[in-house]
Length: 513
Image 1 (cartoon, rainbow, N blue to C red):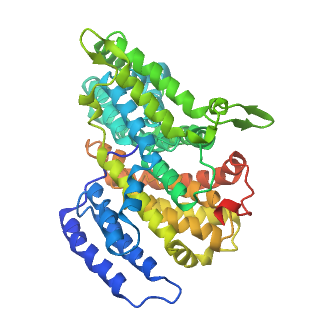
Image 2 (image 1 turned 60 degrees about the horizontal axis):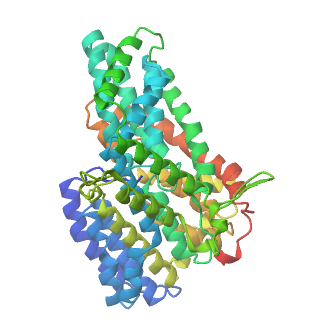
Image 3 (image 1 turned 45 degrees about the vertical axis):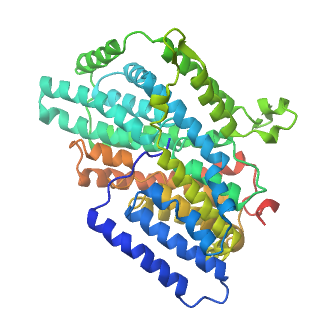
């Protein structure tokens, strides 16, 4: 799911950002206004500069910086307080909140750890297969819970195996495997996160911004996203594994280490014991919620049309994926594990640990997107990107994805998404004359695929902190994966996303005009 925290920013940069944000915002606000820019758009631009600098430098907590529109928009006569506040209660935010609650229930009963260990055991336990097992388990779990939480959960399991190998075979023998498995966990967490709507923050944030920028657009469903998100993950995980296991680190593939790895995995499973009643309940609710997301609306597959369950309702449009998420979360609060002890599938002591700041972050991003749209600032900003008009669609998407991947190495992918989506939305429709989803979906997916730097994503920072990965090692592998990611997402946009949305990317739909 979303990132619970980003890599720490140096203190000096935070201090610079604290003062630079208001100063640069004031300069934008007081500077001579271009003739084609409205006064209200100039004020929104000043607010965006302030929030962008505070987000990127983390001068103040990112969630706190996200509250700026609640103050600035009314005072600058951009938007009423009540209209601004509505952005912080958008249904997209409740989609993510419901997903957070379900993820916390999995962690409360350690269901996610059991799933991971069984996947690892079934893939095999020589170094190559262990790496594949860790990556598959990490990617699958990251489809549903926080990338950072997934990485933190997988690291201790990996460390146990690494330390056993060190005892039996020495640090020199295990060093390549240790680096490969740590990088594999980080990369698989990011790749798995893009596979579902709730997999990572940029995906959910994008859905909310779409609702503000294009109110009449049909909503992207969980099932639609899975049709192109999962194929990307299914292709990218084996490629990443091959690069780590066979090309860069050349891990042994024999059976000589099977007994050591298998013993460690079996020991961890014995510690978990037999599945508890709580685990079983959470597993069933999790499965039913996922199925309800996937099959909420009809899914066309070639000439076959799989009906959606919402079609039986008098008005299918009154429910969306947030309804399903909250329904699943509420079920966990209601279903008892032990009535005598007063224990339920999700206890509030666990539920209150969800990252509430992320929800504020979404609200701030949605408010900013609404300000961009209402004041036509997106139109003005989009005109500045006219230089890529006229290029081949594949080249156009490649350039956009490459730019986003490069930027996300140095700034929060959530902040990047909040700043780029409004601009790219209007660029697509007003400058490039293409379907907005043809540009936006690959750009948003690219925002989660930074592999080169510890600051690129929280999983990168977490595995770097173990001491088994150096920055040159991460940069070497990450550069290769960044290039592959840009090519894969570009091809995915052209050959998969277009048919999934049944769109002619050269035609702008009525809802986007």
